[in-house]
Image (cartoon, rainbow, N blue to C red; front, top):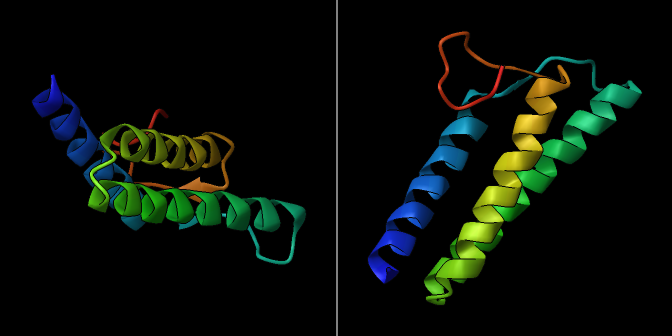
Length: 94
């Protein structure tokens, strides 16, 4: 079971990092939606950093939770139209 948890945690870390690289803000900075996009991006990046910290501390459960939450923030921003992503991306629900 530990190997499965570590594999899944590493996979989610990579998915979140890749998703952050693909997402491009689609709304103007100076609008309420721009502020929402900045919040989503900050949360996703913070959860990526937190997950990496937990992973370094050998806390695989909290690392996976952090990567999952971060991914959720970014994916929600994509679904709301705050970010553009490539049409052929497998990283987002579109």
